[in-house]
Every structure is written in structure tokens, then in C-alpha cells.
Image (tube, rainbow, N blue to C red):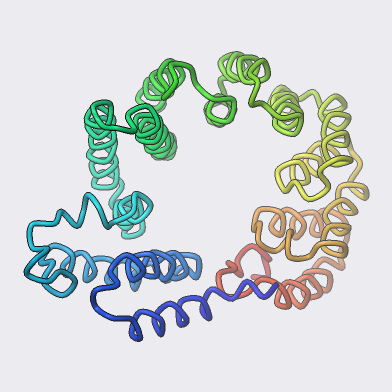
Amino acid sequence: MSNSWRALARKCEDRIRGLRDDAWATILNLWYLRLQALAHMRLYNQATVECSNLWAVLESQDPIMDDADRDFDVFEHAVSFELLVFRARTSYYVKDPHDYLDQLVVLRDTCLIRAKDASRGPNGKEEVELWKERCARVGLLMASQLFEMLDFKGARRILHDLSTTNASGAPSAKLLSGLGRLQLEAGDTASANSYFQQSATLHDATDQSRGIDSALLAVARGEWTGAERLLRGVLKTYPDDVVAINALSVALLNLGKLDESVQVLESVLKTSPSTLVVAEPLVFNLATLYELKSSTAPAKKRELLIETAKWSGDGFRASALKLS
């Protein structure tokens, strides 16, 4: 696994250039892949410019629609929901969070309108569920952004709305789990516990999500021994769970088990290096643990740099290694 986003971006560009103009569905899918690859490489300015240029073409419709299809609503039938979300995300990339929120609000309202319209169609139930699920995803993006802007009141209001409305009338286990984890970020362990308990009782909840949720709650409460026990149980069945690996390392550190904390992350680097290096917080934590452990930290971090370079690909943030 090379994690080469640069190669993917180039491949998409080559495919786009080689396709006929009327293959607009394939072209737009390739554009989405290319833009995502650019974002993974943190070429945000380039991704933003290319997305803006793409939208200028879509709004004109001339290059991809012949005369017979002039009245075809390209935005409704051709542009994927994921591409619409990416376009909104470009405002975040250029550090304009308010415009990002405005565009997310428009997307959310669009989802609600489409859900209402879909209820009158031949596949009404399935379409309604699809658009309401998309509305919930946009709501989570809005809540995350509000948390980042320290607008906890607004974020919690959105989270409350999400927890009481869903495509089938009740939220999914995955959604409730996500809401609980966002509440943990805000420091509201009581609300997080409530969401986790609701999630655990639903039929679509997994043992993995139940274990992680309980462990994260224990970490937030400072119950390090209980957190260690829960996390080791999760990793016994799901050894590549990045969230559990990181949380276990933190729990061991707070229990005064520095050597074990380092060993947890180093073992992942040896057995599944691609798992570790795609999660920058784990690399950052390992570099920090090296600093805490001994005066040989610079040498250990250089070794980490060499190992990371083998697997990280184009999008890795070098600052996670804390070499400066």
C-alpha cells in the first residue's frame, strides 16, 4: 500500500482527458476522486481553484450537454451529493468558516426539500431515507464546525435535532455514537453517556462500537484502569482499530505505564505500519512519548521518520513527527 494520492490525482486527470464529452457521469466521478486526492495531499488552494473552475463549467452546461439535453438539470441528476459537500468544504480550506456553514445550511435545506419531494415518487420510502440520512450527515458536519468555532450552544442544538429525527423516525446506532463522541469533545460526559446508552440498545449497534464508546467515556472520566480493560478487549477482536489503539496508549500513559504506552504504538508500526502512518495523531503521540521516555528522542524520531516515509505517501503532515 503506497497511499499515493499524487498518482491517483494524475490518473484521474488522464482518464478525464481521454473520455468523450458526453460521458459526463464518469467525468464527474473522476473529478470528485481527483479533488479528494488533492485535499489529502493538502493542496487546498489547487483543489479550491479546480473545484471553482469545474463549477463554472457545470453552470454553463454547454461543454457536457448537447442541444437535446439543454433543459436537463445537471445539478439534480449528475452532480453527486459528495461532490456538493466537497464544494462546500472548499470554503473551510480557504479559512472561511462562516461561508462554509452557510453552504452546509443550504445543503441541509436541499436535503429536506428533496426528501419531501421524494415521498411522492415511485420509490418514495427509499428516497426519503436516503435524503434524510444525507441531511443527518450534513448536520454532523455543521455541529463539528460549530464545536471548532467554540459555539457549543449552537452545536448542541443541532445535535439534539439530529438525535430526535431520522429517516425511519429513530436515529441509527452509528449516528447516536457519533453524537456522543461529539459531546465528549465538548466535555459533556452526561449527555455523551446518554447517547452511548441509546446507541448500545439498537439492533444495528456492533460490539466494536459499544466497546469503543464505553472506553472513550471512561477515558473522559479519568477511569484509566477501566478504559485499559475495555480497550484491550476491543483490540483483541479488532486489532487494527486506530481509535482504540490511540486511546489505549493514552490510558496507559496516565496509569504511569510509559513503556507499555510506547510499545502499543510501536507494535502497530511493526505489524501494520500503513495503519499507523495514515493516522497522524498516533504518529504525533508516539513522537511525544519518545520525548517523555528518554534523551534519545531525536534519534528515535529520526527512525520514525524513515519508517513513516516508507508508508505515508503524499498526504502526510511532517509536523506530526515533532522534529523541529
